[in-house]
Image (tube, rainbow, N blue to C red):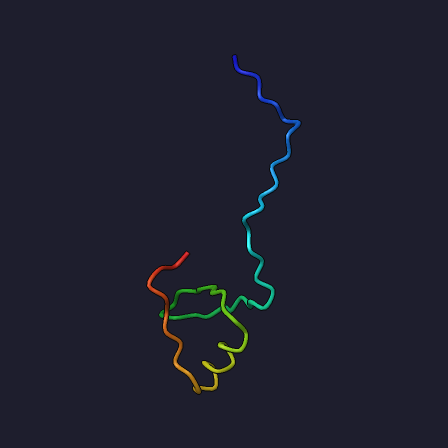
Length: 59
């Protein structure tokens, strides 16, 4: 049987924090979605000033 060493603490160093990102909840066609996006883009989209294009790849 293999013994697992639990004394090591893994600290991820390659994570980038997004400080100005808002989580927006919207309901479309009876389904609820949570989308992370920039606050100024949300305000522009809600006031119909700007059309926000989705990226090719979602994470």
